Length: 201
Image (cartoon, rainbow, N blue to C red):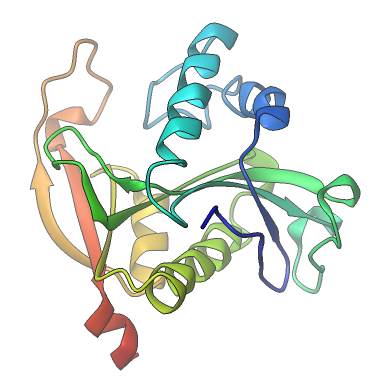
């Protein structure tokens, strides 16, 4: 089963495809968007490499992968999801591939939640809204038993999304960085949501 098209009140989530590469390049051209990931903008060649890796991961496990989020009206409260991507505004990249973090062995039974939004759509609850739909997809449609999410400990915004969608803190990891970013000394945090937690909500 390929990744399906998903919908929320304000967002249309379309499976990532090669036609979306330029959107990924534009997203990663903003260093503030990548502040807690790379600390700088990324080149087209770098993004092209990441796109190829995402497309490959999206073919490995039925239903898991990456989505491009589209909205209308600036994603403000009361706006609606577009009927199709051609009529929408590019909001960002939503992620639910198989878990594959540096110290997390590849595990097709576990989804790894992520989100990267165009800066003008920040602080409107859109990452939370999209993440809830991806969790519903993971647990209700795919029957996954666990979803994890990771971010730098200092990334308060991302940690706020994780808490808002009901995830719980699991651990703090300390990795070796070739070019450490400010705050890396505090490590990276991991959160989780299990199927049992999801069903009990």
